[in-house]
Length: 260
Image (cartoon, rainbow, N blue to C red; front, side):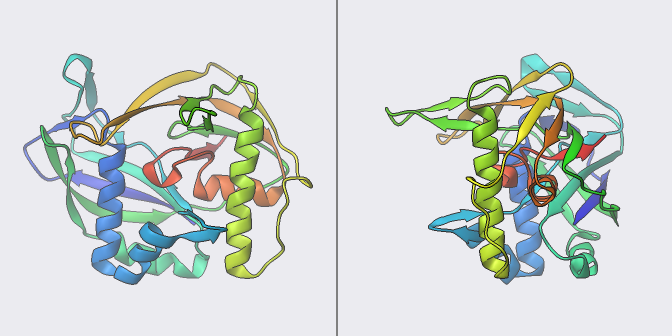
């Protein structure tokens, strides 16, 4: 399911870090944990298991701020309006709609890092109508897609959509999520030998440098890309990508897309 979560700024403070994805992810976990610790534990610690690897099958978009400006030299966003929203998407049945709404409704939280924070309240939440999925879809990124490739020396390369291997890694990630979901639901398994995927960027590709856990000893900078694209793949994989995120680190706010 996918939800649009509407926020009101309730503090006089109005400066957010430009890199707020990790902090927003932490807020989401905290809200869910407060309402339902078992569900939060499943999302954070376990997720859906494929082999020994957990897949946390949810994602979220960037914040949509009504009035804001970027202050790049300070690494800040100034939210001088009062309204904001973001989309939250997860692989749960539609019967969970009221449960999810109840978790988020009227919650108040602080978003930010050690330098600046802003207080928000959830004013309302709406369930978004599901798209009609077909084997060929056109998407636009609501948060950048992050694809990483392991090197023999143990390092990682962060791939551009036009790089060799990008499609293969995107497909592998979707298939792994599908396998984890299928195992959890005792449904038909997937095999990457039996499925194919074709991705075609349809416009400019924007490079996004995003720092996770900024201003801490654990800080790491990732490179992801925002773009519009056509995707040809199995309907089941289209659905999983839409609801759980395309690529790596969906639960950190990467790979959330909208249907064009």
